Image 1 (cartoon, helix red, strand yellow):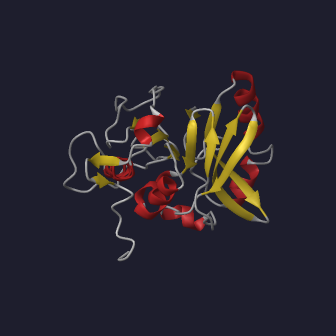
Image 2: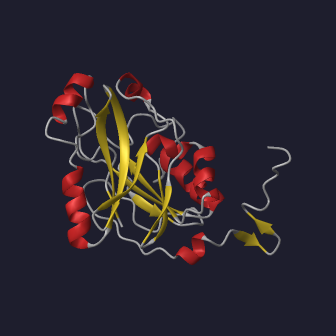
Length: 231
């Protein structure tokens, strides 16, 4: 599976819906993604934008063997995205693919435990997350290699015992810099690929047996121990 960043086919920094519509005048770019998925016989997840019924949508698509298997509208919009896009009204799909069960999430979605828990309850082995983490929002106490957004994604991977594959934008776009940190996080909650800034490709093997094992001690299971009588 190959994962591309959020809004990978258009870029991110649009002034308004009219400018986004102009960028989409030749299509969403998904035809090329479908062709690559077919030719290379791989699963591809990419972020993209679409205009539907006059509304701009921030979306993710999953292709397998050239076919669109899952399509998702970003549920949680970040900052100025609220001025451009309409938020989704459905939780992320979790679908069977040749590499296992894959869920879709987009960037800020990763910061909501309820959304990731939904993915776990639907049997996700890996959450594929096209992402654009803008720089400049770190807490004053921040230090070390893990930005706050990544820490929350690591926590989500650990508390749900699945993989999270994050592909983030890099390079300046209209004056906006990005916290790159593309990585694959394992079910223990730790990146299993190096963290770096700049262009590159991260590669990791996943073991679906690990993502399906929810036991963390002889007497504890991260899903079975939920107190559904209380919350």
